Image (spheres, rainbow, N blue to C red):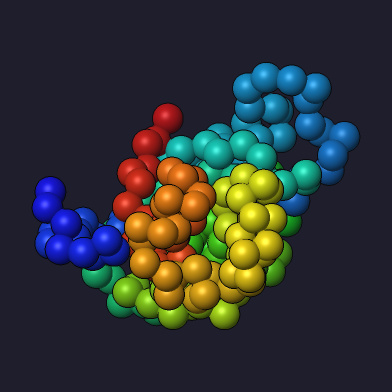
Length: 196
């Protein structure tokens, strides 16, 4: 693949439409080590009964999540209705207060899920991930805490500020994880979803 510039590709794959399910789980239900814990397995099993999904495990101190591809090209109202029905089914099966985020790409969908209210769907319109993310703080990026701190130290407080920079300097300063953060901020996260 040839580069037209440091931040644009001549051919650029379209990010997949991704949904992320998030559930608050009591800390007492988390195991000391290894693999998916019983709470995450329960959530994953309930979701997997409806869609082919990839388990993510911890999103934070008290959250578990799974993600899956959502068919692209459907009207937003249809997508929202189907996701709300799925959310209700998983909540009923697990008893967890669940929320769902959907956007173009894994990173934007994770951020949308973190912002979704319990029992709700945070739906980013198709093609609008960069616009949705621009005013949000870099603290929401699904990258290491160290990178988030460094971005802040460089005066990059919002995802829009990060996205406004050319890729070359971002990657030179922050490495491969910086490149991923930049792609997420631009709504260009094309990492695949791998159902288990």
